[in-house]
Figure 1 (spheres, rainbow, N blue to C red):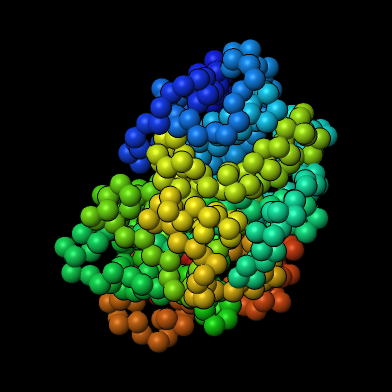
Figure 2: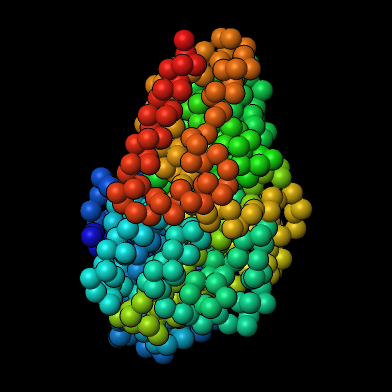
Length: 488
């Protein structure tokens, strides 16, 4: 495990001193994105330093009772797949707020295990199988499915979700729980899923831009779509589930997803890397909304992000307290801050505004309803209130949970491990104008997944390591043989 100390005691002193000892508000800085994505890669740098601004807005209402260098320091230890910008902005804001309220500076130690939510889940499961504590306080980000698994495994402990939070965070939205009824986790932001495309490149290719998931599977985009490996990327796995649920049933939903997979330029280890591909490698990428927003902000003349109408749901991205944390009181205070209106404003307000971040526009959707109205003048132009729309899909949560472990493994077997055969089969389908018998064979599911009842039984068997390996190997052979038949 690699530790990243974003706010050293000295840095915190500089920061608080700048805020409370007479500096002036600085103009906004350009939008930037960290080289460390939300879903980090194993080969990233072992340490990074947060750039501490020389001055920050002196807008905090409570002055410090002592000079900053005389304040005691407390440490919060967190594990998160969030990117550097998110960690940096929330660390600075929380340290300032905590110094005002409690007279203590906060040093946050961010732990990185070289991956996204799936890596964190695996890492924490391993630790708690051997000990009663991970020596960490907070787990933050990685998607609601990961937090449901952490809860089921007894890795989280309940936190307090205040009446104010419950008044402004809906219990459910689009069929999805926004927080755990027993307090084991609460969404900290919401995320939509769609696709990013390079309008300039598509114009040069004389291609009509996509509007729906169905379009991404069209023959006109063969070999032009950047996709992430869903066994490595939680956001890619969630997007795949939404594509499937946009179909009329499980077989038709799988056929829609397979059409998209067969148009892959290639599969990337992380969703952020896949989104980067639209600049020079592939003109279209499936991605989470704020990945799209960050890139559109950088290349507004070229890039467009789309949440497909009626085909995306807004998922919570949770935060929770790990079982037996070193500092449970500080952990609760951090959660209270992140879920407060003040903390939520950091997600959506522009750099340089009174309530916004210091250096980086985060461009994520707050989970609190009141933030959209309360901070309306300061919101980034990309931010829109998801609670006002009526075009989000309503997910079947039970089916989604049942497929959570099956679908990523199925995609890996059907597409990632058989990419050459899949592309060859798709090329033959295009060449033969999608002959009916070839299409029927192409969309055929393995026998143990033909119905939802069979899928549920297979999902149970996949939890056994030996059976799971055998099942996936059979799937790989099933798809390889099928693609070979279709290509003849």
